[in-house]
Image (cartoon, helix red, strand yellow):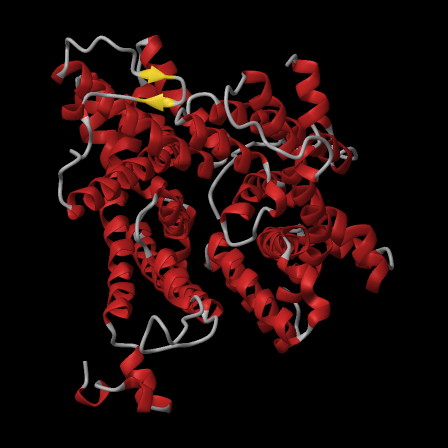
Length: 268
Length: 294
C-alpha cells in the first residue's frame, strides 16, 4: 500500500471519513504519521473553539472579579478557584459522569456525554478561568494615567471600556495569554484519556499515538511524531498570537513595545 | 468493621453508609490518597535535584554540556506532558531491561525487537517473572516517580536557571574580587542567594505538580482515580453485599474537593514561606513589608 493510498484512507479517519478499520499489523511510518496527523484535527477543534468562546467568558470573569458588587466578585473568584485549583483531568472525569447522570434524568442532554460537546464545555470553562485570572491581573495593572486621561476626554461607561480599558487590558495580558493558548492546546490531549469515550476509535492525536505504541510496543516512533506535530502547532499559535500582539501594540513607539516571551507548557 | 455490619442487606440509611464506607475496598481507596502524597513527597525533592542538575548543565562553560542542559529544558517544555508520561514509562522500562539484558545474557543471539515484540532473556525481565505482586507494584511506582522527576525536573531546571541569572552580577564579581574560585563562588555565593528568586517559580511548580498527580492513573498505578472508577461503578447485588448505582460522579466530586483543599492549604503555606523569605530582602516584596511595618 503506497503512502498516497494511506493518506486517502486515513487522513480524515479521526472524523469518521475513510477506511473504517485501523491498521492492525505491519505498521508503516506513513500510516503512523497520517493517522496521528488526522487525530490532530480534534486537538485543533477543541483548542480553537474553547479558546474562542473562553476569551469572551474570561473578559466577563475578569470584570466580575474586579467588580464592586460583592456577589459578582465572589462568584467570579469561586469560578476561577474551582477551575484553577483542581486538575483538569479530574474535571473531565467529574464532568463526564455528571453528564452521564444528567442524561438519565433529562434525555435531551445526551450529546454532552460525547467528547465533541462535553469535553469542549469543560475546556471552555477551564480556559475561561485561567485566562480570566490573567485578564484580571492585567486589568489591575492598567496605568492610572490612561484612565484619568480617558475621563478627562469625556469617555465614560461602555465607551470607555471598549475604547480604553479593554484594549489596554488585552495588550498587557497578551504575552501571558499566548502561553495560556499553548497550554490549552496541550491540554486537549487529555480528553480521550479521561472518561470521554473515543466513539468508533475516532480519537485525537495522542489516542492514535498510544494505539500505535501499544500495538508495536515501541514508543520511539509514534510519540516523536506526536511531539513534532505539537511543536508545529505551537509555532503556528505563536505566529498567530504574535500578529495580534503587533496589532495591539501598534500605537506604541518601537522600543517600548512588549515582546512576546514564550514560556510554554505547564500542566493544569 | 462494626459489629452491626454482619448482615448488610438489613441495614438502612446512615448505618448502611457507615458499614459501606469501612469495607476493605474503601480502605484501599483511602490508602491510595497516601500513594498520591508519597508520590509528591518523593518526587518533589527528586525533581528539584534533576532541575538543579539541568540548570548547572545549562550554565556550563563546556559547549556540549550546555547544549545538553538547554535541550533537556526545551524539549520537555515544548511537548504535551501527558505524551511524555506515556512515553517515558515504556521507554524507561525498555531501557532498563535492555541494559540488564546486555549484562546478564551476553550470548543471546536473536534481535531484541522482533516485529512488534520486545524480547529480552528471562533473567533480564524487570521485575522478574516470579517476583511477588508487591514488587511489581513498587517497580511501577518507582517508574512513575522517575517519569515525574524527569518531566518536572525540566520545569524546575528552567526556574532555577532563571533564578541563578537573577542573582545580582555585582555579588559574583565581588566574590571573584575576593579571590574565590569559580566553584566557591557558585556554592557559597550564588546558590544560597538564588532561592528567593526561585521560590515564586518553584511554588507555582508545586501547584502544578499537585495537579499532575492524577496522571499516575495513566501510568498504571492504582491511585485515587483508579479506585474512584473501580468503586464508583454500578454494583449489582450478585457480586457484592453493598449494591449501589453509578456513583462515580460522587467519587470524583470527593477527588475534586480533595484537590481544591490541598491547593488551598499549599497556597496558604507557601504564602507564609514567601513572607518569611522576603523579610529584609532588598526586593520589592521586602520593601513593601518594611513600609507596612513602619
